[in-house]
Image (tube, rainbow, N blue to C red):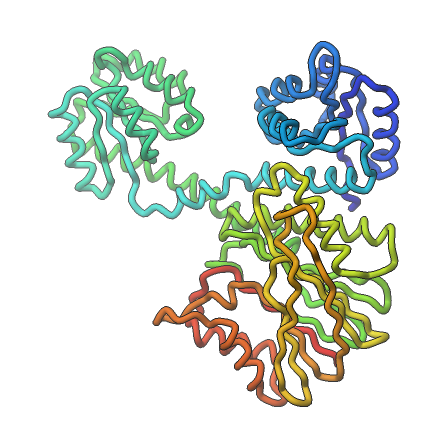
Length: 521
């Protein structure tokens, strides 16, 4: 499927010439374009169309682009809608204003068509990832808890202590607060899994407390239960209008209260586990986009990989392969800084950047030079206002089966490892380029190597190097080099390295594990 299929872009600009130029280039890339000549028309077009990205001029009459963006972000439906400013200015002040307004990036006039296309593709992909997976980091932390934290807010200290004792005895972690102000402060400092609140309290009652929680972004989704007396049962109906989970009668006694709370927590737990299951199912179905399931085929070479996500959770490593033509083939290995969910959805965004940059580069040149591809990716990452805050390493190897050679360039990565089949000698090939997005110019360089039959090339991420054994000793680059020097004749090299690594670590890894083995066959 084409990246642009069914994707709509709204162009908001009072300059008809700019609108038509942008529309022309985006339509050629199969995007559906909607135009608006000012902010008010922009609101109307957003309401009438399903828009996937906004390109907006900064300087417009009546309402400028920054004000328009702020208003757009106030609508819950447009919180993650990619929003790009098109402006003649590109100072740090403008970039800061763009971020403060809720924008994702800036494109400077006169704009480069290739850069524009790359940003649009990457931002739309990233938006789709965030819509589904942007909450994963918080979810993972929530689901990892073994003990349910309960906050009980009641001005009757004797009753509160009685319920607290019985809830703790039942296996919950219950904290009490004697009033709403104290309870709200405790909830903010240590978010509970469930809040139980009395209704009738001095100064601020339970209904007002619930409204305060609903107005707070951090606490509005915490399940809420009213603690009431029989005489207040009619008031409970008003509580349901405020989205409470349930209510518990004070007069029922501690054992009944514990049983009711337990039933509520178990019900919530089932819903959470359903979400966890759905997240893992989605991860399984999408992992192919970050790490291919199958090894690639390229005449004259054997290319295989081993990838093990951290604790079974997809992480920040990504692998990709590109058949450039019948004689040239690209191998890509990247590692986004961080672990688990946080790195994982950024890995999708970076993988999108890499793929788009390579495609754009190949459209304009037939010189397959890794350093130029890296610089294209780096420039896009550096200029992106949000993704530039997360760094990644990247290795690019281009194989040629006509000359039996490789070209390699890297950005902040580990050296690739070359093993001579005749001598068993192991050498490291290091490219000194900077991390992606660290500076505008990454100073990337190319390293070229001629390959003979059965020579081996290995690419690794730091999960291999940094994982430790039960005694706390790292596997390290020296251990890896030693393992490569002493490979058994006739044995599968990738399998042998994997077995030695798993034996050393006892399969307890500390990060994503990625290893690519390339061999001239």
